Image: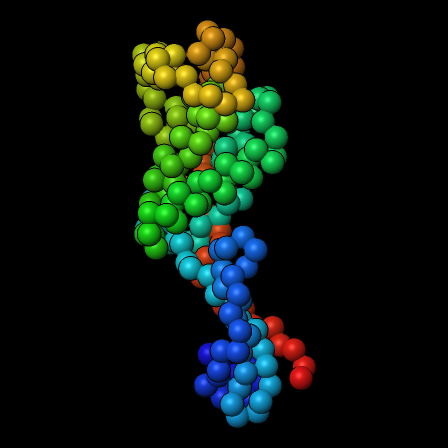
Length: 188
């Protein structure tokens, strides 16, 4: 790490701390050349590979926007969506992969979304599992009825099918937040 003051290519770590959410490490460094101190923040990268082959950083906000479409008109709050996106990111990071296909991100949303709202789950699944007919919906509903998920909404398990239409392409394909090392200086 170069010193931001004198550009010396060497620095000594004085202190290391994990950030509050545990997603990054903040390090206090000191330059042996000029003696000034600075901070770095280090986080592991997670890239999403889109269908075109282009990679971009994972983005919770893209997960939220895709799921929000499926949850339209449902009793799901912004906090619920934020927690779902966090759960999806944690599951993907737990796999240990530095890169993931965009379609896999969409599929990894299905489990947490089923627990959150089963109607939204059906809407989202219709896109990511390529439902092509009413039979595909019927099969998914039958599975939900056999294995109702304890969550905010069990409308499908109870037989309430209103609002179970497919949405027009909830795309949660890519994401944000990745490898970043930022430097902030402190006079001293």
